Amino acid sequence: MLIGDLSRRTGVSTRALRHYEDQGLLRPERDTSGYRRYDEHDITRVAQIRTMLAAGMNTAAICRFLDCARSEEDGVRLEMCPDLRAQLDALQERLESESRRIRVTQERLGALTGC
DNA sequence: GTTCTAACA
DNA sequence: TGTTAGCA
Image 1 (cartoon, protein in one colour):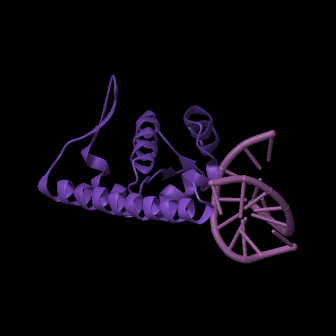
Image 2 (cartoon, protein in one colour):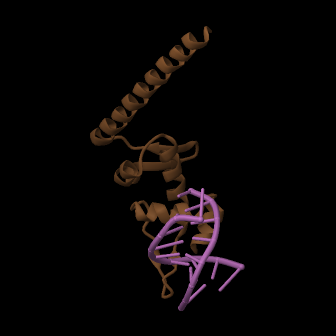
Image 3 (spheres, protein in one colour):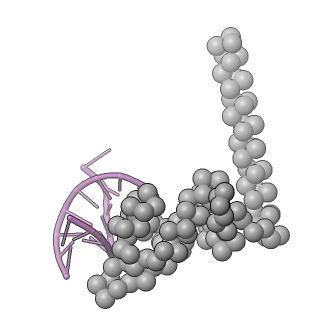
């Protein structure tokens, strides 16, 4: 299928699909016209990418661990390995650090407004 | 009409 | 990521 078809079937813009390719997340074939050709497998692949992005992973991490993704009935799951475990733990720590920073800012704002 | 690359009022 | 330009 062409990029337009994949875009419609996944709800992801053609711009984003090309970007994912630039980031090494997708490697579509090219026909004689230079048009990208995708297969059914790419549909689940895009879904996995979206799920991983939504979970806070950057494209570099997704590129490294996309093959660990498993699409099941209830959603996408990652097959854990020590390396991936470390990556996700580090991400979790950054997220918690940000949460604390936001909380402190909220408290300062509260003190500022007397609330 | 669709895709491609490149670039940004 | 959107959008637009100029092609094929």
